[in-house]
Figure 1: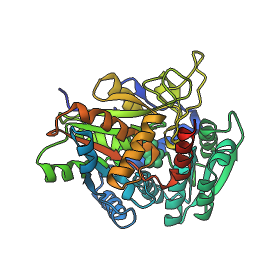
Figure 2: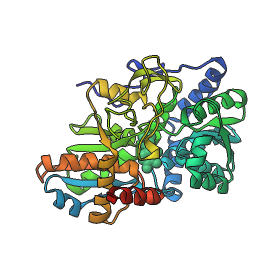
Figure 3: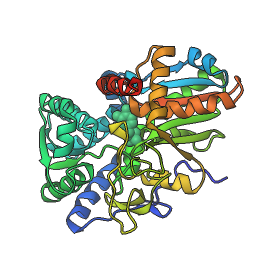
Length: 402
Ligand SMILES: *Cc1c(COP(=O)(O)O)cnc(C)c1O
């Protein structure tokens, strides 16, 4: 098999038929500036030494690799291991990416960062590094999301960010993305656009993957040190796909199975899900070609999931390619299955996972009983669940109600 690592994207930012840069002229020049800056640092040891030092001292890396022994014994099959991204500063993998983009913005001499956010988690991560680097920060957010995610709005404001309400369209994430892109095209001289996943136009999918691959690089070394081998299966949840790409990428040329868990919400046969690959089709979103949720006329559908962090209506273009190549299998996980996995990790391991990460865990719990105890499953525990507590307690109460 030809190696996958180092092959994609090509020089034009394509992952096979996916990716690229579908934007107008003013944005094109802003993107070319980011690409030039990224190309200048992506093989620069000094830049990545700064990156690693800040991940160590600020973000609390390396994160542990943890054998979930009681959960594994309960399931009676393969061993489940957790890459503990929940232990990072801010409690999720998103910090890895924003530290990288913050360093790049500083090197480019930018004084302001902008981001769009749906659930608010990427907005909080961007506000966090803006404070750390001393950047001005504007976060674009649909008014509907501002209403639904009030605690994250307060966090961003506390961190010094300006939350800009977006009222166009359905007043949710895709409208906030359009607004952020519009603002950027008018202010790119002093502004850096921080994208929160392996999505959007080139060079973001490559750049975010290369910042997030620290997850897989660490895990691969840690796992090998503990067991003398590689895992049989990797699982991660897929919203835009950054924590999954981060874990999978360094393993792409190893003989490991990989499953990306998409949010199947109330079911793939209902309109209420966020499964862009399992339940979508190829089209153009956020300046790139990829799988997305759309009507027959190309109208973008709003994504829906129990976990706000998975409700991006598209998926990173590299996942679209890995799906077509059959290198990674993508499976839907319903809200109910995610909630069961959430409870299992609390009860068997004393870890409260993010609802997003519970989707990855649900796939592992599906697979473990089918595999012998000598096999190993590595789950990316992308974040911690404190943020989800009120929501989960409410859902469990509704479940118990007749
Ligand atoms: C944002 C988020 C995700 C989804 O984003 P990806 O880019 O798909 O990784 C998953 N888990 C947690 C904890 C998140 O905050």
